[in-house]
Length: 379
Image (cartoon, rainbow, N blue to C red; front, top):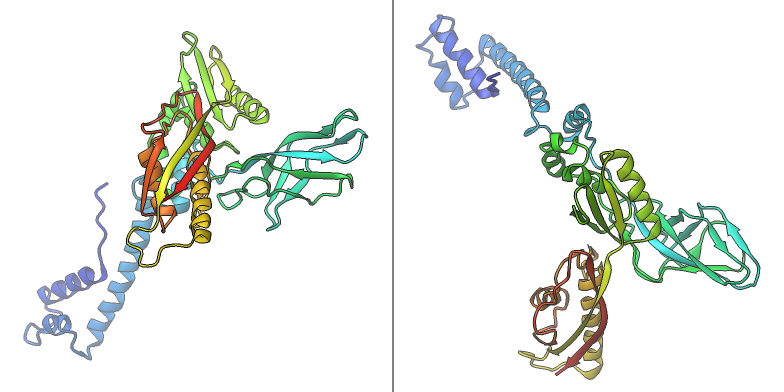
C-alpha cells in the first residue's frame, strides 16, 4: 500500500486550484495569492473550503495513525504492544531486584517463619522474603533470598541498609543485608522493544540464543549472565548467573527448562567465580589549586575515591544518584577505565597513578571482579 498523508495546506491549496479551473472562483479576483499572503477575504465559499480541508486533514491524521500502528518501524506505545502481542512477544516489564538478607535471633529457640516477611530500609524501600526463615536452636542466624516489593531501578539498596522488619515476627529477630541488591530494571522503551521484535522469529525457536536472552530480560533479581554453549559436549549449556544465589539459580533452571530449552538440552547453572582485585594508586588533588586542600579535606576526598573504586568494581550508587552495575561477568578490569570513572565521580581529582595493577587484569568468562584491598595515597 502506497500511502502518502496530506497536510491541511496541501489539501486547501488543491481545493482552490480545482475551484479556479472549474470556474468556481474568478481568476480576476486572485483569491489564491491573497489567501497565501494571509489577507482577510470575506468569501463564504472559500471559508467553507477551509473548514472542509481542515476536516479532511484531521481524517488524514487518524488514517496516518492507523497506518503507522501496523508498521513495526513506525508504531509506538500501545500500538507497538499490539504488534508484539500478536507475535507472542510481550513488552518486557520492569523487573524486581533481589538481595540476600541475614536474620539473627537473640535467643536459643527454634525459629520458623514462612516466606512473605517484609523488611525495609530507613527510607522505606521494601523487600520481601521468598524463602522460609528457619533458624534451628543450635544456631543464631540464617540467610534467605528477598525480592523487592516494587519493580524498576529505584528500589536498589546498598549493603547493611535493610535493617527494619516491617512484618510482625519474633520480637528477638533482627536483620541486615551484607551485600548490595542485584537486578531491577525498567520497562523496555519503544526503541528497545522494537529491536527485540525484529528478532521475534529467533526468539520463538526453543533453544536459540535469542530465546535465552528474552528469558533473562524478563528474569527478576540478576545483574547479568553468561551463556557458554557446548561447554561439555554437544547439547550442553553452561549458564553463569550474577548473583549466583541458590534461589535464583533454581528459579532460572526451572524457568529455562519449562520455556526455553529443547528436550535434549542439558543445562548446568553456576554462580560466577569471584576474582579479587587489589588497587593501589597515588592521587594528586592540588594541581592548579591556589589554596591546597587541608588534611581533613584530603581525607574526605580519599574516602570518596576508595568508595568510587569499589562502586566501579562491585556496583553501587554514583554521585548523581544513578545506579552503576559494576564489572560484568567476564569483563576485564582496566585501570584506564577506572581512571575515567573516577574523573567523573571525584571533581577534585587532578591526577592518578596506578601502582597496582599497572596493566589490565583478565577476567575469564566464568569469573567476575570483586574488590578487595583498595589503597589510595594522597600526594
